[in-house]
Structures are given as C-alpha cells and as structure tokens.
Length: 244
Image (cartoon, rainbow, N blue to C red; front, side, top):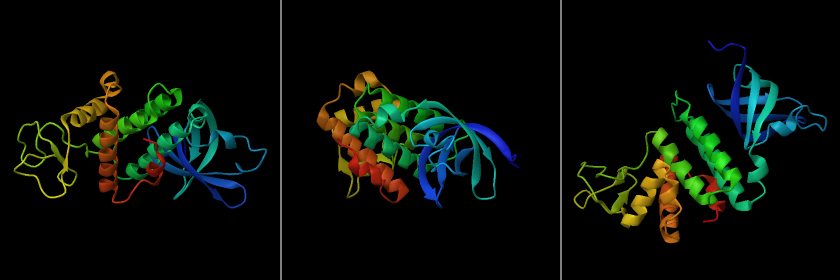
C-alpha cells in the first residue's frame, strides 16, 4: 500500500486548469510511474511554486496520495529544460511530441527499471542544449521508447519468419522488416541507408545519425511516427507540428 506522503523526482508532462485557481498536473515520476496530482492555488499571482510546475521541468516533488488524484505539497526545480526548449520553435514542437507520446504510452508500459524516465530526462536535456537537430532527437527518443514498450521494429531479420536480412520492406503490422516471401500488401519499400539510420537511432549512435542524408532522415522519421500511431491506435497531435 502506498504511503500517504511521498517524495520523488518527476518530469511535468502536461497541465490543465481546475476551478479558478488550481491545476491538475500530469507527472512522470522516477519510481511511481505516471501520477496525476492537484496543485492548489498555482494559478494565483502569489503562488509559491506555480512556475515550477510547467511542462519540460524536472522537479523534486512531494505528494500526498489520494484515491484518484494526489496533491502537490512541495516542489523544487532540479532542471528547467523549458528555458532552452521554448526559445526555439523546432525544439518546442519536437519536445512537445515527446511529452505527449510519453503520456500516451506510459499507461501501456511496465518500466520497473525507470528507463523511460531516465531516457526522457536525457532527451529533454539534449533538446534544450540544441546540439542535434530536434527531429533527430525526437526520432531517437521515439524508437527507443518503442523498444522499452516491447514494440521496437525488427530491423535485422524478417519479423514474420526470422529469415536473416538484409530485407527492404517494412510492415508495421508484422513488427518490422519482412522478406519477399512474407511481404504483404501495404509493406513499405525501404532503402538500406534508411534501415541503417533507424538502427543507429535505436542504438544512440549519434556519430552516424548526424551524417545521414536529409531524405533518409525524413523517411525514417515518417516510419517511426507511423509505428507510434499504429500501436497507440490514434495519432500524436503534437507530431503534426514538427518541422522535418
């Protein structure tokens, strides 16, 4: 049974108003998974911690557990990624897509090793620093999130029969690349460069990721987005604003 008062590190995923002065905050915590909590009075001008509970912020938060909604009692900012992210439209839209995808996928994902939380923190930090193009950070985050969820596309052997590659058609329904014998209508033909780029994204091999051709990056990004949509059974709204 969860103790009534507990403390955890968390990323603010989204917020929405509650009444005249409160907000409901959706948090991805390090040890307690996704949590929805009420932050009372944060919309008032004199709020003690309203500015600390904004999306893209890594916080140390104390919560009082309730039956449906928890209550925020204390919060301290650890790292404000929003400063670097909101200064650039490309970073903002890509980072928003990361938060929305995390919010959607977390209910489906069992993550006892906290990999999703740690990966989101790393991706937001990379986005805020601006060392890599925002769509690349997004694509790497998305495909690795699929891997944590058990949905990473098979990129080395046939997803249907296991025949060793190389194969050059991707069937999202089948779970990845398919051989000629297993290929069904709707499978997408891929160049070898795009397949390799997706492998590098999954491995976090940035030296090779950034050297990819622009067309390859766009093709891989589109397929990764389509895979996310397929598994969620609905589109991620923020993805439509990402500039590739």
